[in-house]
Image 1 (cartoon, helix red, strand yellow):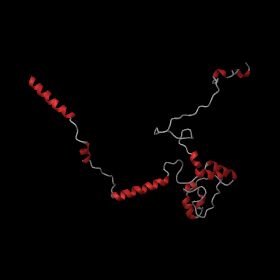
Image 2 (cartoon, one colour):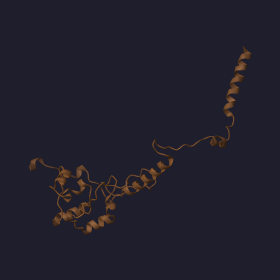
Image 3 (cartoon, helix red, strand yellow):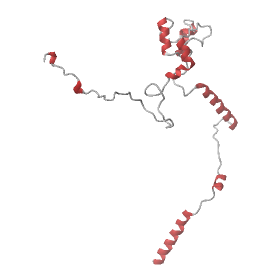
Length: 198
């Protein structure tokens, strides 16, 4: 019995020592690794690469990271109100069955609101249509002023949340209070009398 215990211990020791053997060299493992590339059905490797490059070019022109609506060119709310007060603009309501009505000749393409037709607020997308006049606020907005108004911050202005943790830490700036400032309490309010009688 004692000898069988010794044999079991020796077998167990032999098995556990294999765990401490140095692995084969990394270069021999890397040499056997093969790298494959994903190519969808219907594409060759060259045509798939060409397709990916074309898609990158399309995405670069779309400004996918930008804020605001896509598909039409709008003006600022301030510019719209200035033009509205001057009588140069009006509220735009959607037109029902616009395509069919244009085909029948009931309305012109410029009668369809620019947001509905996917055009520009000044009618520059329609050949032969009367162009709307640009105000100074329109020029300021179009030359980059819109970036000041675009914010993903929960406060409506400033930078959005720092999801990556790369920006410097800063918080809201507290207003400066006088040195001996004492916040108001409920007890400081004047006592209300019973119907002004007592």
